[in-house]
Length: 223
Image (cartoon, rainbow, N blue to C red; front, side, top):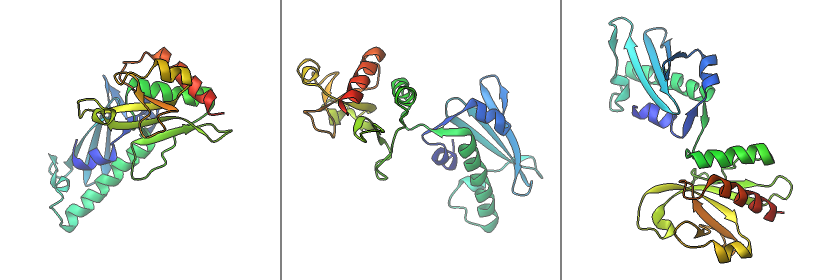
């Protein structure tokens, strides 16, 4: 993926129904779109492999050869800039119409997102512009937070690794505080009051069923 496409489709997830409505054609496990841009001087081919791999090819319709000058930011001529703008606009349109924001891409993060949506009618809230990988859920009635999703380094949890992981914070009962916290699977609440919150990594180390129980308890504690 080139830098322009990588920036546009970062933290995005393709939606099959939207791709098809846009005009993408399904070819095996991929979805392909071909369309003219820049007054039909070029043909843009976009190939999407689910969930979010996007490959592009720009073809000069006069020479029938691939065109790549627009991908080099050091090329600043007027014509190249015009092509770059048309290319960027076309990709942004596809992102807006065929993709959804997907900052947290683990299966367990998706499970929690869908459960909060279906059970409580709540969507993630991204409150901090400087921290786009941090989000919260709050109850619609009390406005209190009941869970968080974040991307952090394992080292911030006291583990000997710089691996970036998705974590969630839940509210904590006194009984859970005594039984759960082991600093291996269950951690004191990251960036929250450690007396009232705990953290788990969404990597399968905690079973889905337990996550959903913790979520329900946390929701109830936010009364």
